Image 1 (cartoon, chains in turn cyan, brown):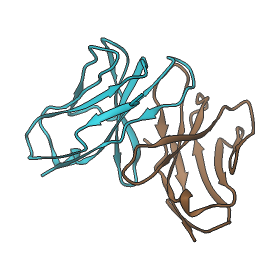
Image 2 (spheres, rainbow over the protein chains, first blue to last red):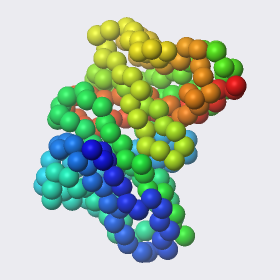
Image 3 (cartoon, helix red, strand yellow):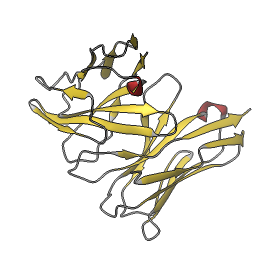
Length: 114
Length: 112
C-alpha cells in the first residue's frame, strides 16, 4: 500500500503558467481533497470530491480546478499561476463517506510562483 | 473566517515536561475533533481524535480534554520527548459535510 502519493514534490512556475498537481491513492477511498498550507494559516480546503464524477468547492477554490474521473486519481489544476498561489499543497483521502475515519495525507507539493 | 482558534502559536518545553495546546471553536454543529501531527517535509498524520460525547480520551502519552459547554478542547502531551517536536494542528468536522476546519497550528519544540 503506497497510501496517498503526490507529484511533483517541488515546482517553480512563472506567473501566468498553468500546471497540474497529481494525486493518487490506492486505498479505494471515496473521499479525496486538496488543501493548501501557508504559514500561520493552517490547512485550508481548496476542493474536495466524494466520488468519481462528483466535486465541490472548499474554502479557497478560486484559481484552481479539479476533476475526478476515477476513484484513485484527483488532480488539481492551476489555470494561470499567481504569486499568491505559492504554498505547500496536500492531497488527502478518507473513507467511509459520512464516517469519522481519519484523513490520510500525501507528502505534499511545494509550489513557488515567481 | 477562522472557525477554530488554536493557541499558542509556538511552544518550547523541557524533556519530560507537559505540553498543552488549546483550541476553541464556534460552530456547535462540529461533532468530531481530531489532532494531527506534522513533521518537517511531511504531510500531517492523525494523532488522536475525540467525539463530543466524552470529555477525555487518552492514548499513551497523548490526551484530549474536551469541554463542550465552553466549546474548547486541548491536547496534553505527557513526558514530552524531543521526538515529539513537530507542528500540531487541531481540527473540527461535521458529519456529512466532508469539510475539516483546521486550526492555525502550534510548533512544538522539546528540548533535550
